[in-house]
Image (cartoon, rainbow, N blue to C red; front, side, top):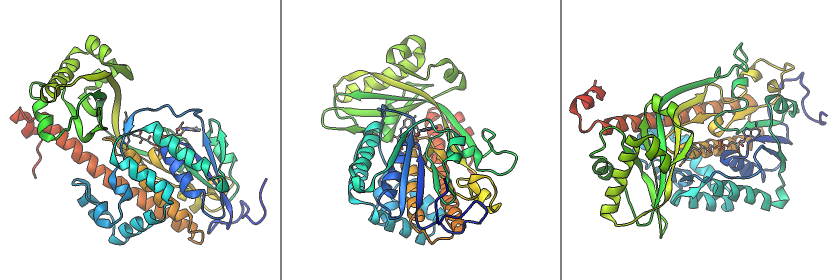
Length: 417
Ligand SMILES: Cc1cc2nc3c(=O)[nH]c(=O)nc-3n(C[C@H](O)[C@H](O)[C@H](O)COP(=O)(O)OP(=O)(O)OC[C@H]3O[C@@H](n4cnc5c(N)ncnc54)[C@H](O)[C@@H]3O)c2cc1C
């Protein structure tokens, strides 16, 4: 039923109505953060939809310190990222982003600060934000446990409602944001680059273990082919155990032959050459700090893809003027992995960054809607450029690293001019 005071589907929506609903589809980390940012904002009621009944993803993740930066200088301290940030963003945009952080409610900011310090299971992040949302009883969120289809999402919209798709890498609405013949065609609105196939291997070690670039080299010295490369910041000692996560580059054939998720026992029986490399690496850790692996290796095989939505909003629909299509009278945004995906453990932070920007835009009710959509498009495109450059640099460095003992192979990978 259409509510009073809202534009009908036959009038152009120029700004957001003074009150309205925000539908957030997907309560993963990014949908939850957006909900927590929007629920206290005056004039909005937030509806959150999630198909899972429990948060079960236990993989250890860490958030980037730039998320809680209190100054522009601390925002660009990452040594690969800093120059990219300066190249892509105007100083005013950086100041605006830092200023918005200051308006993030303290309860939420305290959680974010914690998650930039050490590792945390993904489901702890999800549970903590979910609990925080529920604890704010005065700003209740209407939660629906359901698998939402694209048709459901369109049907739930009154003109002027906002729809935010936070459904992750297999986004519900990404392919519905183009008005041309590609609408609804899988991949029509996605630009994707496959960087490599990889095993993400995690283990616990009963002693402190810190990694740096020398360590990566020496511990892999006899591993001619498969090299286990922990990210520099992917080891974390919590006072009793070290959590170690790293990546082994594999071929497309290896990828096809491996199950999606497995353990060290299966690795040793079915993929002995990868297992030997892992064992050599681990033996060298043990030589340094006599300790033991606690439990087994946890192994996931994934394609490492960089992608982004060419349209991260429904601006094409809005530009067509009012039609029967609900996206022509209701702004739609993609956030998190729905909009941009990146490997090398940076995606949640990027999703949070875009979510903060989006929340800051939505709260400006009198902002012309076309400006709101265009500004979010531009911002997410800049974040895409930033993560594209950072990821290509990491991949290039990894490629060179893997050829350090083979000068000819190394030279083939160097394109100096
Ligand atoms: C092995 C591994 C390790 C990783 N480590 C890190 C790391 O250290 N740091 C980092 O930043 N990132 C890491 N990532 C990536 C990170 O997990 C994702 O970037 C992040 O989960 C994306 O958050 P999201 O909220 O956008 O999407 P998701 O986490 O995918 O959440 C989407 C939510 O939407 C729900 N949903 C989907 N479709 C529907 C529907 N139709 N109806 C209702 N609900 C729906 C899903 O159930 C889910 O809850 C890792 C990924 C992998 C695979």
